[in-house]
Length: 177
Image 1 (cartoon, helix red, strand yellow):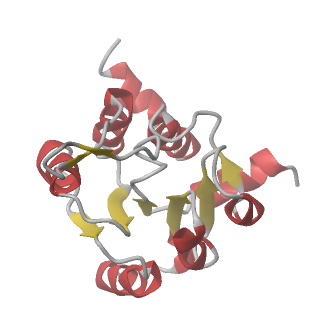
Image 2: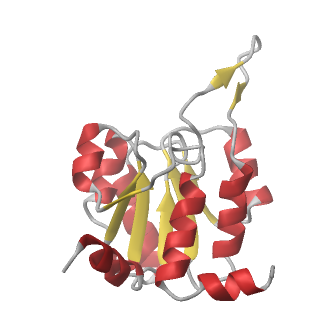
């Protein structure tokens, strides 16, 4: 079985995709102004990818070790993501509680990460995914690596890949043609 076929088989089972924020939704840079206010830049293509994915049966969640009010606004208010967990680098208990709440098994979950705090969840999920500039330990763990870097379309790429594998991309695309 080749790697592509393995990805499609795994992706067809996915009912929830969880994203890290820094280094996945963003390029990992954090801007701090003279007043200590932290801001981040998000790619509009990634946001549109989330909106398109939300038209399918796949649920979306975010688990990030950093808390930033702007991230909460972006994820919940602007993108409509219901399951947003910020400010705890111990992501595994959050993951376990979430899949229990949603009545999902590990193989029904994909996780997209880039750094060491993501490893415990990446090792559990059915479809561990990463970005090309992830740390080496993550790169060794994931079974799918986006071509686009974090903050540069990686989230959109994941969304389209999952929709394609589940036969939903063409349905979503038809609305725009």
